[in-house]
Image (cartoon, rainbow, N blue to C red):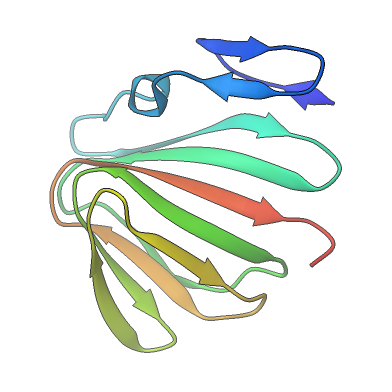
Length: 116
């Protein structure tokens, strides 16, 4: 197992992040991404967006899960726009066209599911 994080606790069987929002700082007028964890099955990436920043329309070859930690995002899912707030969760199958735009400064987790 490979792990990447600042405030992460690792035991024999678990990896714990006590404050996901603290793992990435929201850049002024920009977007930041940071791999927090990866192993042979998943890759966990934190994204921090300033208001108005976006990931343009794209696809991914693996299934993924989006979770909003802070802020509000407008997520395009195969042509439909969905507004997400903290606590929102979205599963996207492989090859689904999607985009992300920050309505306000936001932190999002992306979990890429390898082998899916």
